[in-house]
Image 1 (tube, rainbow, N blue to C red):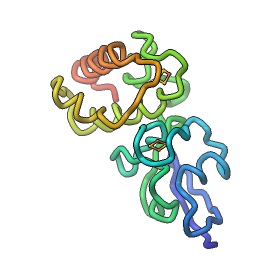
Image 2 (cartoon, rainbow, N blue to C red):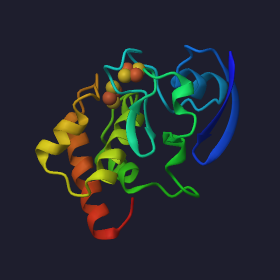
Image 3 (cartoon, rainbow, N blue to C red):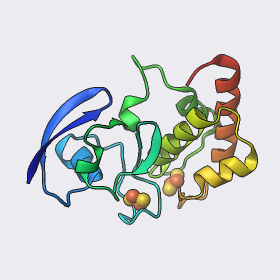
Image 4 (cartoon, helix red, strand yellow):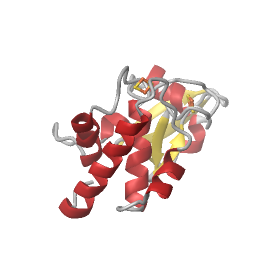
Length: 159
Ligand code: FES
Ligand code: FES
């Protein structure tokens, strides 16, 4: 066990974690940030996606210690004062979910994509979202949400 300081959504947390404890486990079980979901646990589904220094990262597949020194953003850290980001709003507007289990990870992956590329083309969208699985099959609406968010982001300067 070792003590770590993690910067999550702009707040510093001291946690005690075993060497093999994943970032996902610390987020959900120690910090009660349960918006980040456990799906496959093997880096294959994207449900656990968070941002590490702006990069989409599978939190089930890295030890918590690997996040020390990084700025981690979870789904709980996106909205500011109740104001949704353009990506969150676009998912709502397009109804881009059914059970919602994949949604946090989808939104985090899209957020990372648009941070890197504010106007991605279809190929870039598919490439960025390739590792995010939706068991409900809402992919067409997710794609529409990404395009809507991309438009808002481009014209409105929102994130
Ligand atoms: S739970 Fe992390 S990729 Fe599936
Ligand atoms: S909305 Fe159910 S898994 Fe995507």
